[in-house]
Length: 270
Image (cartoon, rainbow, N blue to C red; front, side, top):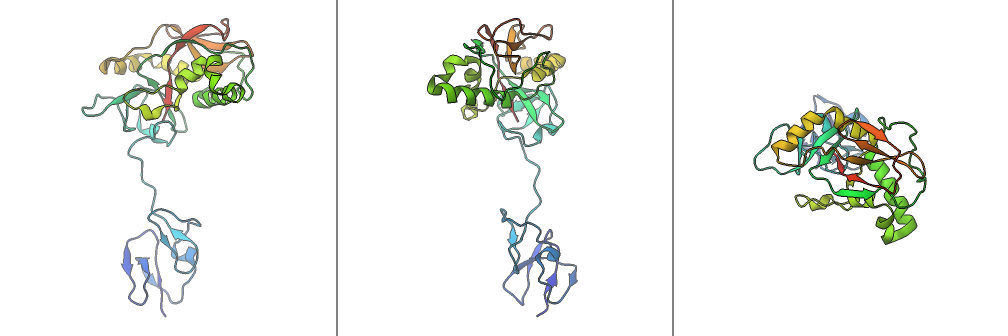
């Protein structure tokens, strides 16, 4: 029987000589049964894909550009945003206030990997970094201002995991700043609980460098501007010291021990 050679990326039509559905081909070729040659190049099944009639390979549709970010994880959507943009609950961002959409944060950092972080629209208050002096395993130590630390959420996860392993349901008493952001659930999108993070030093530095644009967006949506408080970062120095940051001067300090109360305001990855 004469078969059809075709590209798996094209449209579909029914070959009358068989019961299979095939992508359209530019050329006919007899007895062609090699899946890769026919354009089936995925070794695993995929949504809305077509299985090769002669083997286990699949033809998969081209991935679509996401219509919005998945809040709480990086999808690369941040390349469509700018620092100072308003991030909405549908995962989209805009420099403008958009009627019918609900703001959840303001973009304060975009990495070279197109991953972003956005600042909560409110501060949570003042809390201890920790009530004990422990050099957290797997949390990097910074002996100088941590302006190259952008791992807000990885830092937060490390401390949350460590403290829960040590203290279980009482962990929030020992690392309150981290548990405050971890348990933060804004009324506009409570399902983001568990996805907020304590900002790292590099993200706080980005906030200062872009403070004017960030404050302008916060003002447009009638939310709390950047406070001149001393903020806790998630960046650690050693067993007894962590880095605090003063917004008005962009200064980092470790002269304050982890057991002092400092301002806490979360960020959300997107």
